[in-house]
Length: 94
Image 1 (cartoon, rainbow, N blue to C red):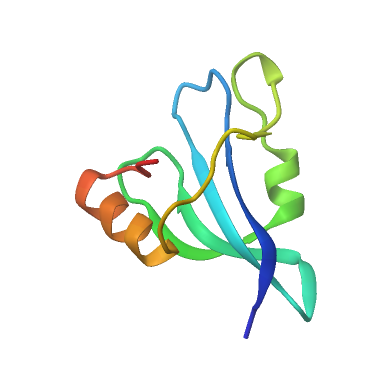
Image 2: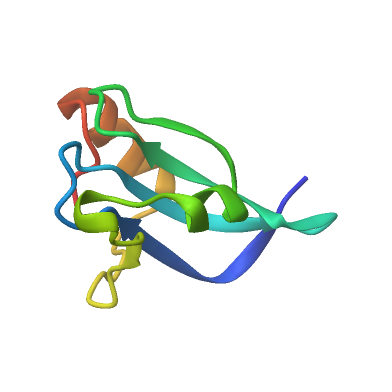
């Protein structure tokens, strides 16, 4: 069972052909290199799941830019509400 992270973060691939977005809410207490959240690879099928932080760190978007954290993002509802909206719209809506 994952422990709640002290804060939630939203990250995305800047200037990528597919606008991938991750809304991560929890770290695995047994493996802090694994996070849980809402993952949208830009393919129209966002889903809740686990992701390796090392894998995210290795992803590069257009012009070889790394994933960046959206420092302006302030969550205003629970993850379940973001997940329901994402399933309805085929992408993470913030």
